[in-house]
Image (cartoon, rainbow, N blue to C red; front, side):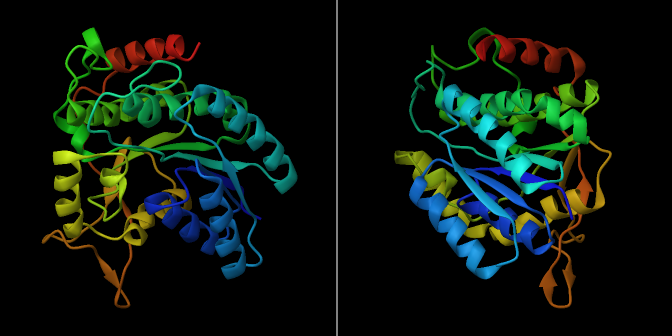
Length: 289
């Protein structure tokens, strides 16, 4: 029996597609979503389609740190019930915002969910991750490449720039990966591609929503994007940052008439280095208490 994979942001988009893809490959799944209705629907649908699969979904709004801590405690119980160990933690939950909004902890929401949630969940599960030599896989984005961390105002409180805040959070995902690797944890970041999901249309308005709804039409499907996560789980990895392998024209490779992905190591932002990773790690520890 294969070890369990934990996936955050698992009830829609890339996360849900990854759940289906990994279940088909024989992995037990623990999904996390913020809506009870969506979690119940996901469990019912997946259990009906894959009756032999081990599937459990937790309801938790990971934007709030108390919810991250509660989820980590529930995960330990479910892992014990499933038997076996932990294969991978996929920190996939994310959001976009078009105006400055804060969590109950007082943190800007994109920074809180896109970075701190995965950071804190990883920290809480670290004893299990180390015990099982599990991998930590962060969903990042190529949008991190042109960014620097705004150290003087890391949550853009003084002058909120929503796209900058989003891109910075994706850079933080990569800095988190870099620091984990320095600590001896198997970890990598993923550029899932431009994917046709609703992330840019949820809880956004104005130009952010309009631009995303236009851009996503040229994106690949969530099922295509999920192939990279399957490849990393099945084949392992040694690099820091991966995308989905394509041919010279940029089209995804085909096998037997279907898109089949294989993880391909790609270049990350030069800002992803020891100094910045350690600095962000120490800041994140303080912000997470």
